[in-house]
Image (cartoon, rainbow, N blue to C red):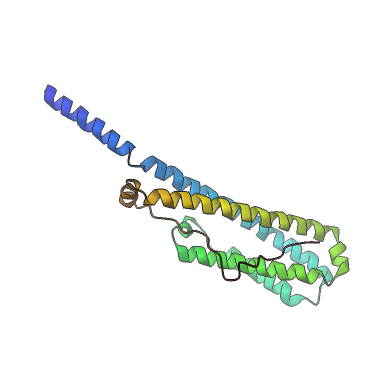
Length: 196
């Protein structure tokens, strides 16, 4: 009876040591960090999307002849809002690319809207427009910070998931490398969101 108890104790101790070094807990923590960083990215994009209707309404009052630009902004915002984004986007590079393209379309449309404001001095002097521009500029900065944080968090996760022995644990529990943001064609020319 003593031999069986010793064998069970040794097996339990060996198992716990084996599982301690397998990286399971760290994989879970890093996966949660990626999810949290993604939530921050979504939060900043949502903040921008929430500013768009107010900005469009202010511009409408001054730039009635710019219906095409206003329509482009509204449609781009609608495209972004229409994308169902959940944790699955983190696992699928194609979904992340689609999300990124929709956000880039909105960024471009907003840039065109701001450029239109240059033609309307009264609009440029409107306090509500100036406040919305300042909020938009701040939001664009927050988006950049959130995306950078997300990129770093995904890099940390992906590196860890690919290292031995964690890669074995990751495969057993179905954890794969996460999709990440990538630069789009023409990204070397950042959109101008200057409100001066």
